[in-house]
Amino acid sequence: MVGQDISALSNGATLSDRDYAYIVWGVDDKTHDLIGTSFNLDLEKKGNQELEDWLRVSLSDNAEFDYVFTEIDGVNIGILSIRKAIKKPVSFQKVPYIRSGSNTKKLSELPALQEKLWSKLNFSHFEDIAAVTDLTIEQALQKLNYSKYFDALGISIPSGYDGILHYLSEDGIIRLQDNGQYSITNLGSILFSKKLSEYPSLFRKVIRVVSYEGTNRLNIQKETIFDEGYALCLDNAVKYIDAFLPSSEVIDVNRHTESIYPISAIREALANACIHQEMSISGSSILVEIFSDRIEITNPGKPLVAVERIVDNPPKSRNEKMSSLMRRMKMCEELGSGWDRMVISCELKQLPAPKISIYEENTKVTLFGKTTFGKMTEDDRLWSCYLHACVKYVQDEYLTNSSLRERFGLSESSSANVSRLIKEAINRNLIKPIDKTTAPRYMKYIPVWA
Image (cartoon, rainbow, N blue to C red; front, side, top):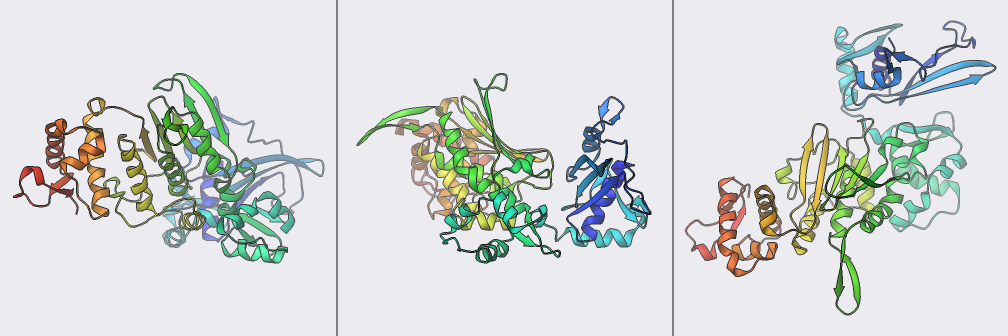
């Protein structure tokens, strides 16, 4: 019953243009008198499994709820807060429900409500939902590091609350409620919150960094969680990651150490993971895993563009407001140009190209450490060759045997090996020659889609 009601109320909240719906235990349905309850969801079980865990597994991945058991006027009250459905109806055991009067019914039994719900879902955005409500202006500003907002945009902080509110309201960070109090949106919280763990619907969105000994997950070296909003912790997270990476000594004007990985690529990959994650998926966070030979950055959600067109495709994001604000704050690049920078920075260090993998509902970007051409897998060589052709093409240049040798740090004596790689890339339908009649040593290549 609880699972069906969570589905029904979540979908009903979307229909009613409310951020949350609620189930309350310990209040008389008719008189609304406080009568107390012995039910505590935190203690209940379904078989041998905790009820809350069972509910989260049985509900669709866009379901999000939080339970509080407390005492009011000497009696126990239980309150279940249920976030509205985003992107798709919330379902329980793969069936979506809806409230009709005082009854919970299958959504399919009410086609008119089903059509209206889908119409609402098509325009629902995670960023607009209130993360916390009923705050005074002082309380709202105390929860946010709003000075970061003004510093990043190059705006002087206004002297009074009215001026600060004007900017924060215009960008959808704080909202004035009907009762004269204020709410902080998910957008404001996830970017500028001093503590994401204070928000039940957001604490799973933190950036988590895990470093391992060796090339597998057998031995964890250290694990750290960055609890601040992304605008506050992104640079610190990148510096933290860099501290775990192998480095080499460089002697130019001054002697200094330099990371084997391009820091700009790490920062761009992490920023992309924050921006392009599927926010409606509950229970998933941004995960950075550091191994001795690679870095893996995983976020919930699949890419909105084909992996093969990640470099040249027009910008597209599922979190448009967050993407727009982060770009204005110079925290990231446009989708295509960001990948240009990642690929080029890896090429300059003669590293394998960044790799994109899709696992069920997650996207993983892998940055590889230094390795020789001979030790790279054939797939990694072909992917590096393909992305080299892509970045050359968007710069109005072309892939050649010479440019590819330079990209891998190979001498002219390796021309035959590179020619075989180019031939295989053509056979795999990744690249194509501009003019097949050109002499082999002058042949130029472009991506197959160009």
